[in-house]
Length: 328
Image (cartoon, rainbow, N blue to C red; front, top):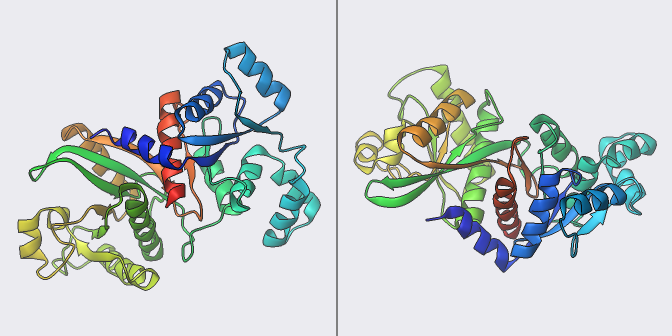
């Protein structure tokens, strides 16, 4: 299964309005042009019109059909600044200085329904992208934690070809507490449904399964499950659980009898970034799995961060994913 092609096809069915606040980066111009041509998005570029046009001419990239917005001159700037100021309890003059920046303006467009999602990060640190999204787009109802996940596609697992798992949080929260772990689980379950169209079976991973060991780290995972069930009792979740009990039916049946998640988990919530980062790289390198991500989550509307070394192909893939997230 070519999962990126799958996302492209889903995105083409209902392309989202995606704002790109780093329009003077050549990769953004090329990716936005291709995204429009492929029908996976309706790109909105934020930048100085003269600069963007000059760069596009220099690169030979057509801007036909692409919307270009100068955040410093846009007629919505005062309105966005007023909304931002009220939410943050600050003077409008200060809010205006913040909102006129492309990243914040793009976030406010998403917040106010002028765009469906945002893709940024090729020229901006991840921490700044997350901060801007937190202050403008805000969080999914019931959540207050930004996080991330990887889609892990294994060529074969337990007799199933192209088995897909969600690994979270693999890039953002270093030492999440119980509340944050719970929110990571809920956001991951939401993305499992939106992106993959599957019913999430969420396992809170630990070195312990159902009390087989006693430690405060295991207690944190148990508390996270309780909180997650309060946030969204409709998701099928269980823990604390060792990895083999979570994904191998025979082991799950022995170690966690009666669990509807044990042996069937497709969303794996790791207890910290050490475990998650090691875990996804181990599976990627030793099981020849394809890792897609990290993909940001937890926000009220889709916001995705790119590596500063991202290629045009990477931007196309994440643009397709963002469109599909917006559909959900």
